[in-house]
Image (cartoon, rainbow, N blue to C red; front, side, top):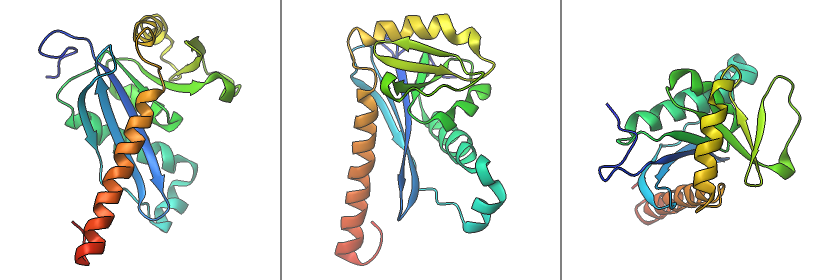
Length: 184
């Protein structure tokens, strides 16, 4: 069973993201941070590249399936620490909320806020927070947790760290392939 806190009792916050590579497909990354934004745990996936048949058969449900079920499910299962809230920069991940017992929110800059009917959007520290449909009960705890985190961390910044870590893993993998003619 995962804990909501680190061994020293610190609350953790989860950041879940994915990066799409034209060459490899989707890579996922999951970073757990302390209230000060310090890394507690990090996991990433191998690339997932859908076949053309999957693209046709899944249609518009492909990205929620890949990001929300495959990538999110894999990364959250690997984690040793359970956060109090998970933030994502991929709206397709929100479909995974039904499998969790904690809030999962989509974070986007207010400048990119789009009006979506039936979706509850909140404003916290210059960011729009979208809750999964049917999980309006997450509203108060999400606002409280994110307000606390925003006192020490620019809310979107950990996503940049995830993206850079994934790009670095791709570079290392590519250097291994270039140097030896096969994957490292």
